[in-house]
Structures are given as C-alpha cells and as structure tokens.
Image 1 (cartoon, rainbow, N blue to C red):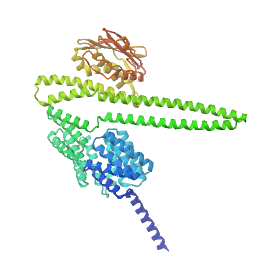
Image 2: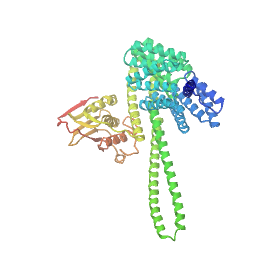
Image 3: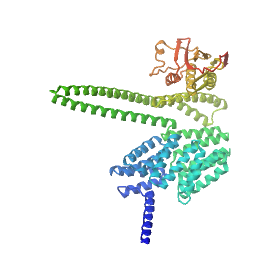
Image 4: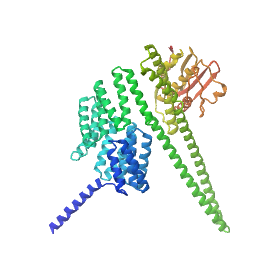
Length: 633
C-alpha cells in the first residue's frame, strides 16, 4: 500500500513538472500550418534580414486576417512593428504594435501580450522615452511570471535592465543583470546572455572602465555569433567603436563604425546606418577633418529623412497628437451613445405618459422624472459640444503643426543643405568659407528658435506643460539670452543693453522665462533696423518684477496690436525680410500666465515697441541697487 501511494505521488509530481514546462514552452496555435511557418521564419529573420522578415510577416498578417486567426494577427503585427523599429519607421512601428496590443487584450492571451509589451518597451527605448519603456518592460515581466514563461521573463528582465542603464540608474540595472545571468546559467539562451553582457559593457564604459567594457563586449559578440543574430553583432561593434572614441582612439573607432556601416547597408538597418554616420562625424571632428565630419552628418540627415522617421521629439509629438485625438473621438462616441440611450428612454416614457394619462399621481411622478431626464440630456449635449470643440481645436493644432513643418522649416533646411554642399565641394577659399560659416551659424540659430517654439507650442496644446517653480535670477537669463542671440544682433550692428536691479530674483519656471525673453528679444532684433538699440529693463515692484524689452525699431500698426497675443497669430517680415511662424508671442502669453504673471505691449509706428511682462517675486530678497550693463554689437 505504501509503495502504491509513493508511486501516485511520483506520477503527480512528474505530471506537475511536465505541465509547467509545457506551459512555459507551449507554441502558439494558428489556424493553418502556413501561417505558423511564415510567422516562425519571420521571427528568426528579424535580426538577420529585416526586409525579408517584414515581407513574411505582412503575408502572414494577410492570411491571418482572412482566416480570422487572432493569434496570427497579434504575432504578425508584433513582428512587423519590430522590423519597422529596425528600419527607423517609428510611426508605422507604433501603429502595428498598438494594434497587436489591442488584439492581445481582447483575446486575454497573457503570453502574447507580454511579447508585445516587450516590443513596445523597445520602441520607447529607441526614442529615449525611458519612463514609458520601463513601464512596458515591467508589465512584460509580471505577465511572463504569471504565465510561467522563463524565456519571456528572462527577455523582459534583460530589456528592463537595459532601460534602467540608459536612463542613468546603473546600480539597479547591474543588479538585475547579475540576477538574470545567474538564473540563465543552465539555460541555453545565447541572444539574451549577449544582450546582458552588452548592457554590462555599457555600464563599465559609463564608469570609464574601458578595458572591462571591451571584455564584456567581446563576450556579447561571441554569444550573438552563436545565435546568428546579425543585428546584435552590429550593435555590439557600434558600442565597441563608442568605447574607442571615449578613449580618443580615433583610428580604431573609425574602423569599427565603418565596419558596422557597410554591414548594416547590406542588411537594411537604416537606424544603425544613421548612428554610424553620427558617430563618424564625431570621429572626424576629433581628427580635425571638419569637411568629412560635415559630409557624414549630411548623410545622417539624408537617411533620417528617407526613412520618414524625423526627429525623435517630433515622432513623440505626432504620437501624442494621435492618442489625444483618438481619446476625444472615443469620448464623443460614448457621449453620443449616452444621448441616444436617454432619447430612447424619453420615447418610452412618452408612450407610457399617453397610456396612463388618466392617472394624475402617476402623471405628476413621470413629469418630474422627465424633467430630470431632460436636464441630464441637456448636460450630455453640452458636454458633447464641448468635446467636439476640443477635437476641432486639436485638429487645428495638428494641421498648424504639420503646415509649419512642411513649409516654414523646409526653406531654412534647404539653405543649410546648400551651404554645406558648397563647403563640402572644397572649391571655396578660406574667406568664403568663413563668411558662409557665419551665415550658417545665423541660419541654424534662427531654425533652432523656430523648432524650439514649435515643439513647445505643440506639447502645450496637446497635453500641457506644468511649470516647475524655483528661484530665478532674471539678470543671468537676460545675459544668456544676449549671448545666444549675439550673432543675429551683430549681423545688423544692433547694441544690446541690460538695465537691471541687482539681486532681483523671481519665483517661476526658469526654462519658461528663458523662452519668453528669448522670443521677445529675437522679435526685437527682427524688427529693429541696422545700428539700432535694444534694452532689457528689469524693475522690482512691490510683489513682482517687471521685465521690459524695449527697441527703437519700426513699431506695430494699430490694427495689429489687438491681434498680438491672440490664438490666430500674425506673421510679419522683419527689416531684412526675416521670417517667423507667429508662434513665439502665443507661447510667451501662455508661459507668462502659467507663471502667474501678465504680459502687454505698447508701440508707436516708426519709433519702436515695448513688450513687458511680470513674474512674482521671492519676497526674502533685499532691496536692490540700480546698475547699467551694455553688450555692444
């Protein structure tokens, strides 16, 4: 009897262990073998041949959609998204990955959802959005633990460590990696071990332990070779090149980057190509070859534009815009359904009112209820109208944003490319190169201000930017502003002055105040003729400081004064035909109000303008003494 019981216990344990093992490695069931074969081949080729992998995944998606195979749709969309990340087409990557996540949520498949969250974490990691990346990887770790998938848990933990390392939390990253490598000691997962050693190499490099970093990278490269992971090999070589560059060993760094560049071209990984060109530009700057550095930077821009990736900040802005609009549309749909439900109830109650018209007490009760329902309907209609107005405003913001990107930014970038081409040809003399360099500096500065205004404006419209209050020294901000804009003022021989009160410290958001003053001074330079004068006057009042930007420029027409700070900005050419987007003053008004201040303008045509704004004071600051400072053109 004892032997029989013992055998039952042993059989139970075997079944339990085998069951857990199967659950950890159970393959996804597809509606046809053809779908499974194409998805498995696409997965194997992601880091070997991205274009071939993408084509297989697209075919699998068509088959899965036709056969209504949810598992096939999820896996296909995830692999397509991963390939678009490799090809730096981030907008398409985001669309396919969010489609996969939505389908995984509908089917309640935790294991597939964990895979998609891993891919979304990688998406945000590539775009340097570390909080979103860490959030997705943490969810993937939890789901893989719940589904008892050791491989997925190891992958998610490795990715999470990489996100912590890139965000600067290297101690936590190192702890996770050591635990991960210990847990994988008896498992054959070379690609994950390779990623762990590469991240450990990055940590060693950040601590300036370059030899230790190179040793870790060698291990990572060996593991990537054993798993036939071409992309992983190239990423490791890229990190090796960065390590040589950190040691100022330009020849070895150049050799590594050129190797990665040639191989990534053959395998069609444009994101690696872009990174190589950017790093080679740094190498040639170190070697004092400025023209070769410019050539590599121009190649970086060409591939970035060809891949339709744009700047990382712009991609995030587009995604925020898309998500905000989708949320508004969903809210409108819900409100519409609620209104229809209330109208249906009203029709039913109206019929009941006719049937029971002879019963006065019931009539009174129904009338009271109808009154309440009508009030609810009015409330829902009002909310619906409000949501529609917000959606229309979001669409206006989106259209305005991409109109400026498509038109106002194209011209200065075209001029920049033309100047770089002339410099790259080597046919220009030294004096001509110096003159073009001055123009290049001025154009880059103007474009930088335009782009900074554009991104700040779009973010404030889409999701808002809360101020971070701190003590702010206004005189230092004014000096920094004059230093930044000095090339533009020198071009027109304009004198810049600061009339200040010493120790005038306000309490507000430093970066917002810096942007306000930069826009106001840049506008003053634009509308002030050659050899003019611009003065920033800082006066301490009882509870606030007043900052005025005073110029002796062309002034503003009376009909335009009322439109200065409106939601529909006006754009006027400067004294030398300088162009703007009209967003600067809108941002100034928004940021001044966020800092609990006021902004206004006075102007006289032909004599100049004065833009003034206030910022609350730190009341602990002692009474100031007046001082006059001038920055000559």
